[in-house]
Length: 429
Image 1 (tube, rainbow, N blue to C red):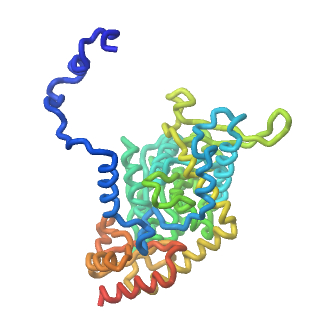
Image 2: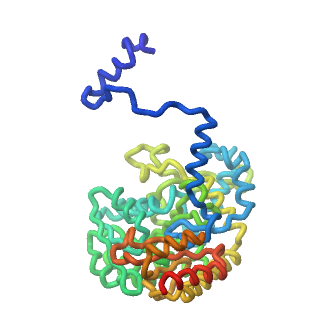
């Protein structure tokens, strides 16, 4: 290869392209190599230092949740026809994959109350950022107003990806809900989108009606980030006039042990369909009148001219989304309501049982926030007892330095909650 390009050595290639001042003039300072067995032993020792969700009673949530995943999910998604395929460019040989996408979109539309959904996104925070990009395209404006009740990672991702845009954060009120007056005051004629979350990061069930009304006063789009399971018992965001509903789908059939990958969802009003990111599968009939599925819209840059692409997303996390739609199918409509109602009841039971000062005393589901005297001592003693007490709110909210966010799923039983309450009583006595 060097002879073919007329260069005497590999170093000569680097000399011509990489300046001497940025090149390392010594070998890399790396330890000696190890055998495969030694590497395996070392990695196993490192892994043993961690605790996994099945090894403790976990009240940790903050966007990722310890739900039970039925064996049915793994038994289907590990089949080779689902585990190995890539993008279904040829619909005639990809009917199974396309139907999965179509069924997923249908489920998301039903949960969100919006007519169109794409075939999934990377995860929750980038879905929020994608909604901001759509709002810029639709309105030509460059200001975002976002509630501090939106997940901190989503707010950070929106800020990172929205170069040149003004981003105004709106505080939470004394009940842990978005401050309506501050939100309305922040919105002006240059506002492209208003972002809220349902339930919000603290677990508060937001009163979406007034928030949406305030957002639409100047023609801005309203984006709602939502937790899909509580939507089974909450009024769908689309019914309030929300333009776009996005969210994190990990709680639908995806365990915490995937190491990061999950999936996001993105639903919108039909008028936004050509500016939505990713791909949309559609239902049609073939030449003989038989039901079939196709990729109806593909707005990413791989498929059309770059200057006309509305997004650069290059995967839909299809396998993780498949786990989500299998899980929803396993639950069924009644099952989804039952698991959401169970979380609602246990969330309120836990808040009463812990007996601490609530940060968000109003309606909550799945999570709630409390102030904990001696938070450091609680974490030390809880870990000794095999309990993960929750998420330290001070990491993201300076005003809640003593705050603890406690998450409840169907895996947290009354006995678990009572055990946690007994421990708290000892710590705060």
